[in-house]
Image 1 (cartoon, rainbow, N blue to C red):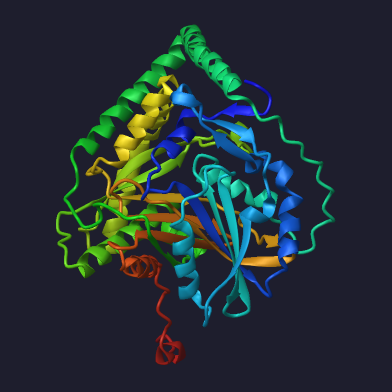
Image 2 (image 1 turned 30 degrees about the horizontal axis):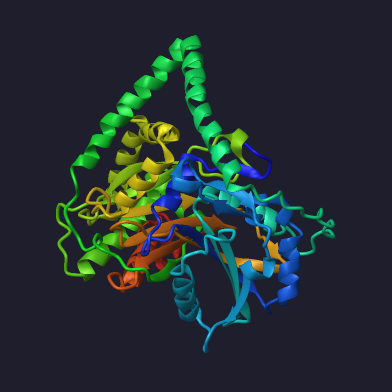
Length: 477
């Protein structure tokens, strides 16, 4: 590969290829900060001081002619930071609803592919003397886990951070010519079979490990057969438009851990159980039957190894869970989710997804592009929604001396999925961001209210305090 060029992975490229006029594949976040809002040049300076640590943010995408190879990353000679860091103000009264409406509008706009695929919006005028930072970045650049890692680069862990070092001057690599891109693409394509042969040779040298991996994959593929049985049809699936609604639900990580201690399971099991309550309430509010019904969700899973922390490409696979919205009792609902997730883990379903994804490296880029476009136009009867849970920093972070009070995530919609849920933990909080199609999901607040109610109903009840008469009584002698 030529200097200043990097070929996009097959998975990263797929997030570009599935994007169309209504499905925009950028993830996002909303940080709410204590006020007053800093000056624009202060924010620009804080980001500029750290930008050299994430070089991808100064790179744009080049597509080889005729889709001869996967897209490549090249330095953007026309990069201007103030184009990507924008400022706006909320209309009066500047409440949470006005912020959520702004986020829906910002996230509905497709990123400009001729420039680095990210934007940050500073929104001032939020009630209570607060302001917000709305960030969006294309999924081909970074997945949710590594995206959270970026916070430790852009933000500070202390209010008064040490003086920033002067960043090194940035010199973009020369823009490669089209003939050089074609030549490099052909060379890269020729290298892929070699890598495959080398991988097979390594497998042959470790046959016992290969047998174990093959067994894991076989069990996982067997578990994936459940996707061939689509869940009952609901209003959660269908054609979507380009516009978005966005809402949030609040929780505390300590409450979720208390529920886990009381009823068993994992934090993720509790999260899925309370989301199940939210979808149950939503379907019932829409007048749809929930008896015998499940809501199938795709749960992205990070397959990033500890050695890969600090890299910013996508390392994700997925599992598929059936949320038991037909179960009315909250404890039984959690037990059902817990048992199902344990079965999915034992089936190594995420391992199969990761292995099948890696095989995408052998597919010609043109076929990958065509497959992605076909996928977005095919009714996705097998999946009703997507649920992604990302751990965030468990300490306060700051930007230009301002503490971030709350943090909420945004997940994109694709295909025929009309609602998606993202969860992120930050500084003791566990917050949910719900994305809905503007036309067909105007009631996502019902889902958010149900999530908060789901946490409340599972919390351990305090032991009853003895009455005054009992406290004053004495045992008979």
